[in-house]
Structures are given as C-alpha cells and as structure tokens.
Figure 1 (cartoon, helix red, strand yellow):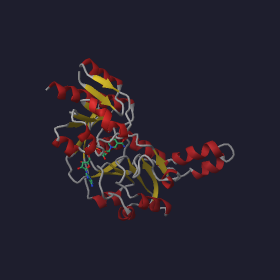
Figure 2: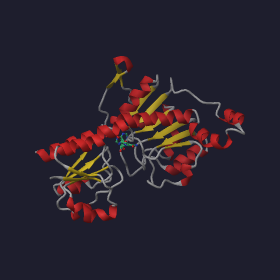
Figure 3: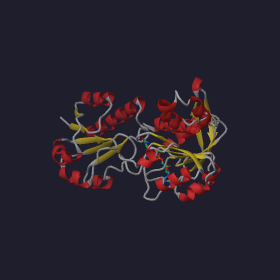
Figure 4: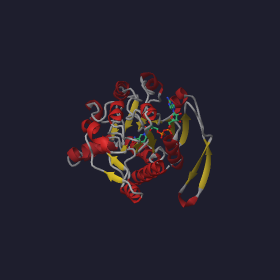
Length: 316
Ligand code: NAD
C-alpha cells in the first residue's frame, strides 16, 4: 500500500479519492524537526506553504517518490534537487486563483471605506464617539469607474481583472511575459463577454492606476519599492496577495505615513509567520494572515487536483 503523509492537511474529498484508489493517507501533522526520521516511512508527502521540503529532508528519505504542493508557490520545496533525485514534484496552480482574486477585492473595498480602522475602533469607541467616527470615515470612494493596475497578469492577475471588469472598473496590465490578448468573462445569468486586455509598461501602469494589485512570483528584489511608490497617484491604494518580499515594507510604511498612499491591503509579509508590528497596527493597512487560497471551494479543488495527480503518478 502506498503511504502518503498530508502534513499540512488535505481536503476530505481529496483524501477520500486517494483512499478509494488504495492509498493510506495520514493527516497527522509531523513537526518539521521530526520529519527527517518519520517521513522515511512514507512514499509521498503533500504540503501547503508551512512544511519545508529541503535538500536535507529529501536526502534523509530515500523512499520518497513524490512531493505534492497544494497551491501554487513551490518556494518551500527544493524542486530542482528533488527532480535530480528522481522525486516528482506536483502543484495545483489554478485551483485557488478565483479565491485569491476575491480576497483582493475584500481588501480594496475595505481600504476605500476604511473598514480596517472602523473594525478596530468601533468596539472601543463606537458607543461613545459614534459621530466622530462617522465623520472620520466620511470620505469613502467607489471602485466603479476607477482604474486597477495589475502587475503580473498570470492566473490570479487575470481572475482579479475579471472581477474588476464586472464592477465597472478599467484594467491596466503589466507582465514581463504577456500571454493573453483578451479575457473571456462569464457573468451571472450565463452571459459571456470577451474584453481586450490593455497592457502598458510597468511605470505607466503604476502612474495611471488608482489601485495597484500585485500578482507576481517571489522575487529577491521587491517589485514595488520607494521608486514605484513615488510614481503612484496621490491617494492610490496597494494590495499585495502575492508573496512577501515583492513589496519593500519600509518604503510602504513611508508612503502610508507621508500620505501619498491612502491604504494598503496585505495578505503576505516579508517575515511570515511573524510580520513586523508596525505593519500590524497601522490604521491604513487591511490585514489577512496569508489566506488567499483559504476558501472551502479552493481547498476542495486543490484536494481533488492533488489527489488526481498523485493517483495518476503512482498508476503509471
Ligand atoms: P502565474 O505564474 O500564473 O502568474 C504570474 C505572472 O507574473 C506570470 O505571467 C509572469 O510572467 C509574471 N511576472 C513574473 N515576474 C514579474 C514581474 N517582475 N513583473 C510583472 N510580471 C511578472 O502565478 P499566479 O498563480 O497568478 O500566482 C501569482 C502569485 O500569487 C504568486 O506569487 C503566488 O505564489 C501567489 N499566491 C498567493 C496566494 C495567497 O494565499 N495569497 C495563493 C496562491 C498564489
């Protein structure tokens, strides 16, 4: 029987598919420091972003044949080394795109109507200073008619664009390798529309957008730093649901504190899982703890996709 350790959990539907295909699926979490000894008893491991599968762990587990990543980013896995050692690596890139796109808009709506600050202050001051708070949050703005600049027009960037078009927004896209010229969007009522994609150079997208949303992979150098903040429209908003490291956090705080940037929505941070406190307490930052893919629908899609990939791998 093939033994699989789902160390960061797996959706019940995916687990059931694997068990029906004859796999033993262990969903108990083994701490990182115990994995070199305990993973030796398994043929495969699935992880999300928490468990790291580095060279030393791969070396310690000669029986390991497959590493599955539920989600997109494989920066927690030494992929090249695994492949060199004959260990297959699979991820589920498309399963969570729609959920991440929706989280972008949760942050955008939050930022333009001050929800992040209102939700912190109302429990404390809501009864005694209701009218002061009402005044403080009076100058909200609508998303409709505004321009969203999307940096990184891959799977999630495109899902974000589709929602933006649905809200009556304009979309400006930048990608180092632009791959699509139009987007097909299915609206409610089964109506499908096709909209041409408007691309521009990175600086132009940054300078012309009311909101900027980042959907690039992890990079050593930030994609948004002091230079880019200086290019933005006064009163712009920034959302980062991609990866920590893509935005220079010092420059972000500077832009918020000097008033150039109206708000930021952050799902990802440089120092996960312990982001810096000055970001966490900032009244202009809407926060989520890396939950872009954490919806029931995305997790089920991830579980089913991963299970199917694993079953097919061991069948052939
Ligand atoms: P993707 O590979 O489909 O798209 C990424 C796009 O970015 C590609 O088209 C690529 O050409 C482009 N790109 C790369 N470097 C660029 C740069 N410097 N400037 C502009 N474009 C650049 O990936 P995806 O599935 O859309 O994922 C995007 C990001 O979202 C990844 O970092 C991924 O790890 C992250 N993600 C976050 C969550 C979450 O929970 N917040 C969940 C899933 C994925």
